[in-house]
Image (cartoon, rainbow, N blue to C red; front, side, top):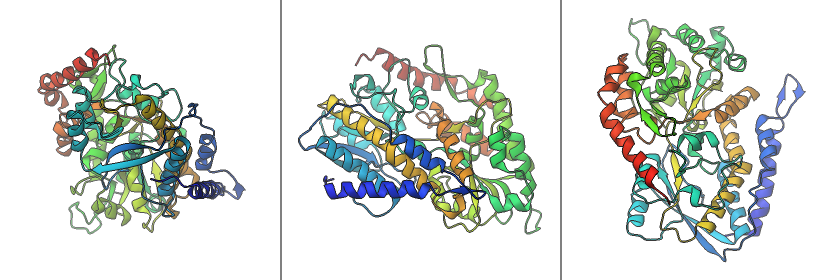
Length: 481
């Protein structure tokens, strides 16, 4: 992209308009400031504390995956008046002008192109946004640079997420870090949407108040879900013509509930190394049974079995007022803009009130990696740090804005829920980088078939999965780069 001063002026005007539009919310006739506006105001104070630098027109080369169900790219082609698009464009413009660079981005459906490039020892990319499973492979094969080697990456800054970065750290070696430049960690945040009209017509509790009071729990959720479940056509069978408490694919309706209790299929030992031991993890075993109980009780859960994510069949079902709750991800919220009925946004429920916090599962992600073929790590780390900081200032608030820009979600409570969701994100390595062996390998199948015997199902797989994990541990432990 080219750097143009006129576009910089447009950037300022657009940002001010976004902030102004977020500041007009009112509650009960009393003027108040939207939490989105508050976030934007706070993040405009962020500073990366980087030294001045002029990179003489260097072309910063990025490779990213792009798909229909996440924001994989970090560039856009031009300003088009859409809030998030323009925030991304102007972020990049500002960094281009600041360091005298251009940013180019090649995209594909997988990570094979940069993989082959690095394998051939070719310096084609400064940064690669890789599918999480591919990122692990590249790290294990010595193809990416540990972030410890990047002088200008400051993971103590607030635009880097310490919890998610820790989840992806083996021992003390950091190959991966999660920051505000990466929108996939917002896209894949598991949430619940609820139909406000159904909630009202059945005189159910206000879920916003339940969340804020700490009472949004499995039992309260199940009580509400079963209350609305019914055989609408009177044929004595529950199918797609009827109404349900919960809509969602097993990967979301089931696994998100499971992780909301605080358990993971892959845990960490005293040395911060990953361990697979579901068959002896008493809490996981108990929460597995509780998740299935809630999911299947009263026939309240419905799965269209059409795919799961970015699924228009699921979206249409919810928009037709045939489900009280929809277990989905952040990315699907804008798809509800055409819904006539108002809906709200919720975190997944806690197991019980004794559980201290809500927990938001990140179901998948693409992650920033730095190829070992990179010829200037100082330059690269400086540009990435600046892009990440600027994302925290402008792009993340813009992302929030598109989520709540529709009439149906323009309420302070939904915005407040977004902050809870953002601040409680975590991930399970068995649900992401080892999803092929663990989540998709056997756990989702057990959810779909309502199998409670998780002990024997996991015990038969411990040896094979542990070998895969041990291989990764050995590589990361022996790496000194």
